[in-house]
Amino acid sequence: MSEAQSAGVHKNFIGGKWVESASGEKYRTVNPARPKQVVGEFQASVVQDADSAIAEAAASAPAWGKMPAPQRGSILFKAIDVFERRAGELARAITIEEGKPIADATGEVKRAMNILEYAAGEGRRLFGYTTPSELPDTAAYTFKRPLGVVSIITPWNFPVAIPVWKMAPALICGNAIVFKPASATPFAATIIAEIFEEAGIPAGVFNLVTGPGGSIGNKLVEDPRIGGVSFTGSTEIGTRIYARGAEALKKVQAELGGKNAAIVMNDADLDKAVPGIVQGAFGSTGQRCTATSRAIVQKGVYNEFMDRLIAQTKALKVGDGMDPENDVAPLSSKSQFNTVREYIGYGTEEGAKLVVGGHALEGAEYEGGYYVEPTIFTDVPENSRIAQEEIFGPVLSVFQAEDVQDAVRISNSVKFGLSSSIYTRDLVLAHEYINTVETGMVHVNAPTLGGEVHLPFGGLKASGVGQREQGTEAFDFFTETITAYIDYSASARERSRFI
Ligand code: UN1
Image (cartoon, rainbow, N blue to C red):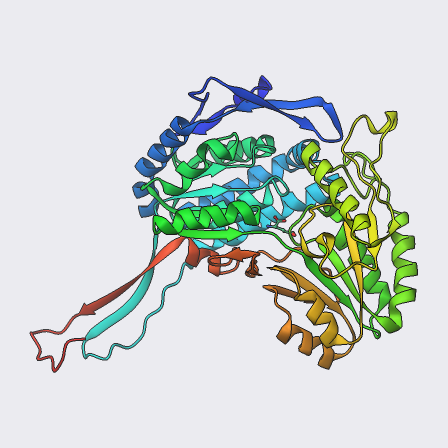
């Protein structure tokens, strides 16, 4: 174990050194499966810490930006080896700090490694383009230049994958980073910093500052040395970051909430649809922005769908994510636990019918963990809170639809637009849906979840703003495109016009 971890007291990583916060303050995180267990103590950072991290990043950015991109790629490839070696430890860190089942945590670490692979290889691409000039003896081309220093501000629900899918493209493009993980998940973030340190990232290129966003968030957006901000989190905070970033003319990428719907048509293969919706709604305890929080079912298949959905949901095992037998783990914090229970209350108050679950699980065997049963509502009024708002927990609302137009109308009737899916065997219906549904990602015969690292990830409407994450768009976000015109004519030439 490294120095950063051995004492159970973890430090910030600034300028290549593990350092304490200037505040002298620390805070603790706990295991949501048994909140009496402290995961560790972390630095409660203040503006002064963010300031030194930005200063170190700004000092190291020019040399990092000048290093040939394939060499930066070698460091990322080295990081994959270290990830591989520490994968089990990292997955356990996710589960004890965030709560998700260990299989989900293991998948998350794998996903982080996939994006590292994709970004590391990009060191040998980072293409611009060339095009014929309208003038003779003139070369015209574009190339990418790093932004300099970028802030990476990430949520607690994917404490490894989301930071890495931002930092890997940021780093390969030649930026130095200041990484501010969610205050609830600094442990996984600390291990990520250790991994990059071991992989040989130059001092100052990778900086980690832990603690609550309130105290340092503004600094990480507004400081003139910051060239771009990549944020994932709530629509409320993302809107503020975007506004502040706009004021300072910063590039901002904000990946926000979702209220994702899966549509089930009469001709759907229920052997695909039901498990896909159960996984989408209750996998990772519903705490992912691509979770399925609505099912919209065509009337002809409704009864059979519901019978199977209820049976499969009741078969889910709820318990500590460290036990691989469990399918659904605790909510990640007391405040999430309270929020989800409040929403279940609103569902009943606003006239929806509770058909499965709906309770917190308490008693000695649950050790005070933040467990809520997988919960299903039917007969949900379309404008009620559980139909419209992001709950971020294991709660599914089911609606009935007449036909594909009606199903898409319901799917689109929310302010969010991240992901969606349809189950049908009919290509005509599938395309009617693909062409009219208002989400950034659409799935046919597959859950609303996730995405592949080499394809763009992001949403419409209140689900996000700025360039997409992942895919080639990621490399566009973390660079400026420069356009070069080079006159290589042997002597001065007459120009008929200047353009
Ligand atoms: C996924 O669903 O696999 O915060 C990724 C989130 C999203 C990432 C989801 N930004 O849940």
